[in-house]
Image 1 (cartoon, rainbow, N blue to C red):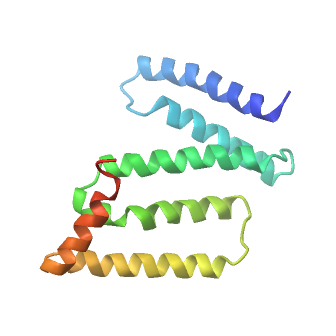
Image 2 (cartoon, rainbow, N blue to C red; image 1 turned 120 degrees about the vertical axis):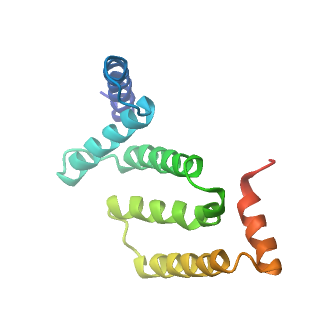
Length: 146
């Protein structure tokens, strides 16, 4: 079977099973998110074991989970913390690269993340200053009104 069709079939089957489980229990979770996440985690394990050779499929599904986590945290955190959205998203992205074995120039990626986290932490801690507040407000509003 085509690996992409296999992945889509597994996600669909998990969706049905998990939707049934969710209906029978009091558990609260996103059925689509868990279905996609279980699928890429299983494929990643098979990839590490040399039994699956389609890292692009894993990367696409992993990217869906990263964006899902991003939106989940955005929805469930104080708006003031949204100043950290970019470094959070990039940290998850780098973690995804690492999971797939992409380690070329890792030190540069880690350095960039350290700079971003540091710079935005400074802005966050000094956000009450009128000039800094303007910058922080623009960063927080980056994804609004589009």
